[in-house]
Amino acid sequence: MAGDWELAPLSHLCAQIADCPYSTPLWTDSGVIVLRNQNIREGRLDLSSPSYTDEAHFEQRSRRARLKAGDLVLTREAPMGEVRMIPENLRCCLGQRMVMLRPDPQKCDSRFLLYSIQSDAVQHEIKVNEGTGSTVSNLRIPLLEALLPIPHPPLAEQKAIAAVLGALDDKIELNRRMNATLETMARALFQSWFVDFDPVRAKLDGGQPVGLDPGTAALFPDSFQDTEAGHIPNGWSVGRVADAYDFSRSSINPGGFAGETFDHYSLPAFDAGRTPKAELGSAIMSNKLVVTCNSVLLSKLNPHIPRIWLPDLHATRRSVCSTEFIVASTRLGYSREFLFSLFTSAAFASTFCTLVTGTTGSHQRLRPESVLDMKTVIPPSPLVEAFTAVAKPIFDKINRNIDQSRTLAILRYTLLPKLLSGQLQVPDARQLTEAHA
Image (tube, rainbow, N blue to C red; front, side, top):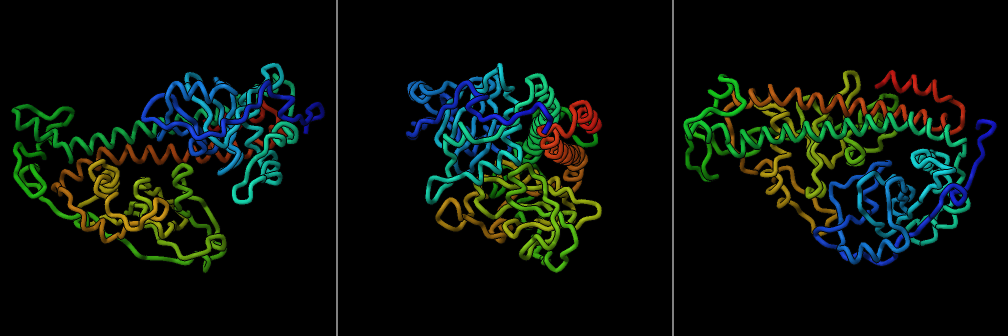
């Protein structure tokens, strides 16, 4: 720790620490967002599945603390210790099992406090002092107010440290948004060509498909035919998903290769950013499926939570995945980009979610054979090739962005304790971050 850096309790650094209301919110279909624990993961706010309440209950829940930009929200249990800063222009209120921290702007920078709480040292203090409940760990407010040791360098130094770490987070967030846009582009192209049949409809109306070169446009017919699946382009057929892929049961016990590093594709790794975890075989305790170069991974568990993965295989490491995934391998004439787009399409999802067995939301699974039997429209191979030529660069860019974000996250994790302890100076850290920009 730098000589003039003291450790200070949150009560000294915050202008206000406010607990959440203990009542369950009134849930509505729209209105004001109620933050929940599942919305906060690894310092990022995920509002892909927001929860809402009405204006009256928003006012009621905001009596103790009306959240504003720069406030921090910290989860008290299940999971405990996740923290996120409220961004600009987000109108929201606290859900249950969370606390608001409002840094004193004269003493503490909000983003610096965010990184301090994320540090291993503070997270350790949270974990070792956990617990008032018998079944659920619960972070106590007195611990927050008095015990957590937060580094307290001068305010200017706090801002400089936060700027260095924030630049890495900003790039990771930019990659995430870019990937969301790229995925939307690929999904829209698949929907247009293979679900809505827009090029066929354009030719049927006497026009030319928008945005297609003459060679690609010529691959689409100018009429429809009646089938058991409804109107589909003339010359196409109705078949089963099994016509496009098979599933691989090839497995391996990584524990038999204790010193070898594997890329491990698991459900937690998917949820944490679709990045496989590099692990020694000795750390992987059970049999896993082998991930092949022409495969797409499709989760069998709780299909209402879509976990569909286009693996980016490492050049020198073998890849394995959880047996909760189906390893779908493409057949001749199909590509994994086409298969991934089929699996992520709304039309596929609407049927996919009906194939589950089990009665509880946490234990619903589907049988791989049920997926193979699903009906699907089969386009000619040349059209699949044309789609792949457009989609593959998009998915390759997505995987490059994910890989870069993983590198940036590792760099941030490495720099964080060194900056907070004063072991590494800001100018040196800035040079390291700029080299990875």
